Structures are given as C-alpha cells and as structure tokens.
Length: 491
Image 1 (cartoon, rainbow, N blue to C red):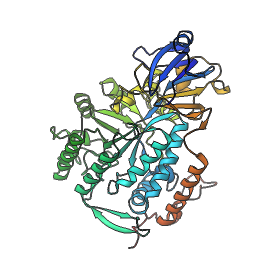
Image 2: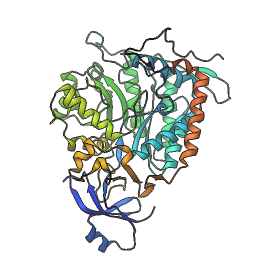
Image 3: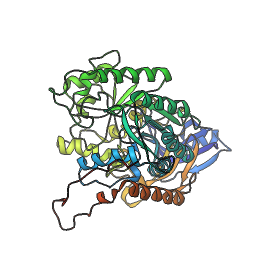
Image 4: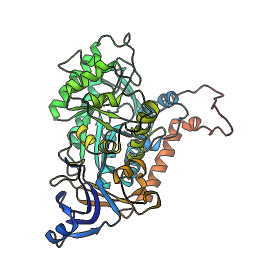
C-alpha cells in the first residue's frame, strides 16, 4: 500500500451529506481515507504522497454486489433458453461434476469481471444451492479473490432438502459419490468460517447461508397460502442450527426467501432467520404482512432485477432497507452494477408503474453503495468516501462521447455509465487496476485457465446437449427432444 493523493476529481462521496465535490481530492494513508476536500487544500496538506491526477474523472465508492454465485461465470449461457431448464441443469452439474480447480478458475474469472466493472466487494455463494461438503471449494475461490485484491464474502451452508444430500467428489481424478448429512454440511461451513473469515488482511469474510429460510417450501418460487401453513421439524431444526452456528462464530446470515417463507419463518421467533444480522435475496411476491415482518425485525433485503414481483418500493416505503444485486451471472447476467441498477429502475418505474420519478438516480446509486454496505453489516467501513473508512474507490473516465457533457453526474451514473467506463480501482488503499490495466493478476493466463476448466466441465457433465442452437429465423424456440438434466456420474 502506498500513500496517495487523488486530485482534480469530481467526487461522489455518498457521505451523510451526500456531497459532490468539484475539483476535489482524497488523501489515502495505508488502507484508509484520511482527508477529503478541495484539491488546493489537500495538496498543501499532503505533500510527498503519490499523486493521481483525476482531471475528467468521476471518483465514486467501490461498488458492492451483495448477492452472486460462485461457479456461474464458467457455466453461463448453457441451458439458458428457459429458466426452468437451467434450474434442472445447473445444480446437478455443481453437485456432481465440479472439481477443486474449477472453483479457483471461477474465482479468477469472476473476480476480474467484477474488478473491471468497479465492484470492490462481492458476495459469492458456493454453487447455486450452497455446497459446503468440501471446504476447499470455498478456499480456492477466496484464494483467487485474495490474489486479485478484492473483498469477497463467501457464503456456505446447508443445501436444500432432501437430507442427506448426494454429492460427487473428484479429488482422486475419478468420481466418488457420497451422501452428506445436514450436520456434515454445518461442519463444512464451520471449517470454512474457521479457515477463511477475516483472512487476506480482513478482505475475506464468510456468511452462513442456508439455501432458503424455510426448506420445506419451493426453494425457488412463491408459495401460496395453502402451501405455506406450518413449519416442519426440518424447518425448525435448520433455523436453530443456523442460528447456533452464526452465534458461535460471530458471522452474519444470508439466504433466499420467497412469498410465504417469511410469514412461516416468523412462527419460530426465537430462531427465525430474520433480523438485523440477516439479508434475504429475492423476496418475490411477498405479502403486506411479510413486509411488516421484515420491517419489525430489521431484516435487510437484496433485489436482483428484473424481479417485477418483488415489491421493493413498498418495502422501502415501510422502512425495509433494500439493496440492488446482480445475482450474477448465470444464465444470462453480468457483474455490471450500473446496468443492473438501471434495469431495476426501468422495471419498477416504467414497466410496473409508468412513473419516471420512482427510484430516482440518487436512491438508485445508494442501493449499490451505502445501502448494500448496510446489508452486509459493513457500512462503518465501506460504501461511501469518508475520512476513516477503507480506501475502496472506483474511478470513471468521463471524457467519452456517451458521457459528454460532463454534468448531472448522478444522472449519468444512473443512465449512461457502464462498468467498462471504470478505468482505475483501489481497494484497501492498493491500486488493483490503473488506466484499464489490471496490476494484480495475469488476465490472459486467468482467462486461459477459466476456458480450460469450463471446457473440462462440459465434457465431464455431458453439457454439450444443452449448448443449443440460437434459433435462427424462429420467433419461438422449440425443442425436438425432452430436456434431461445431467445424471450423476457412474462410480
């Protein structure tokens, strides 16, 4: 880390006063911001620091993606024609055909994609349905992010029902199938917490992550009132064990939730996976009663657009804190937080309500910076540019045709800026990318490794059958043969 002085920038602080400083400067010492103000004042006070001239640049807090999936980068587009098909393919693939090297390769490629889009903190759930039977999966993914220099929250925990859960391991080079009990999943999660939480100079954290907060219900869709009636013994057991694990290790909790689950989880108030140490993803179709429960318990919500059935405007109006996430990246998403936030605005104010004043640019930008930091319990460290906070910074080149004239910068962030416009990224006071060049990793080597691991996965799992033709000349994609998910490998 080098003491630095960023000068002659337009700075969007997202501090409590929401200051925008023209011809501004930021002084960094070690991993912290030590001064913010005008360039003239700071240049006089901080002589001898390495100077970065930011003329024509917009300096913003590093972006925060509070929900994404490890593994998705190297499988995206496969089986993407319909969501139901993709769901049938992806979980069996992750649970029976991935190797330890696959997770390191995915960490490198996903970390580089996030870095180049200005995302300095990202959540990564190991697999779609969390897989914690082999802690090396998580440690390899975190190793890649640690080498690049990013912050990562690794999410591991119990997979969904049935328990025990079938998995296949490849450490010997050949498939070895076994069934993992619920307690073994918790043990694997605890081993991951013990090894990784607070590693890489504190940049790597671990959250305990059950697949959903009520495992007896549909794990990926809304449940109607006649389906969401009473907690089962498994529901109560999972909630109790997740709560015990979180308390034991002092970690936060992350999970998915859909209509019916929040109301049901609240039946067991002592152990409910709700509260200020929890953030829930999706919340499709939740009722007014469930919004009230979220507000009462102080539970955070994260939303990945389009998700038009997620009532984020009602939640925010009732005091529920909401952040925007990518849910990156499969089957057809990306880690560009600017475009993701733009999609949230579009689906809420145009498609759903036909009102351009809903989710205005300022609120939208808060939802991928300070609001996301709050959801992660990290707002005291990241999410805004303030003295004493971590020096996590993204610098955007505004001297481009689509960003000219350089005015109304928050509107520009909401409407026109792309992840590819980020040219310099600083995390913990260290420059990870400068002038568009990644300094902490060999990009070509990482991409080659990712390509090899992705192709090897396709071969192991027989995924060629799901790499469909694009439907030239068709208005409606049809399938000649039934779609069958990959079968577990023969052992």
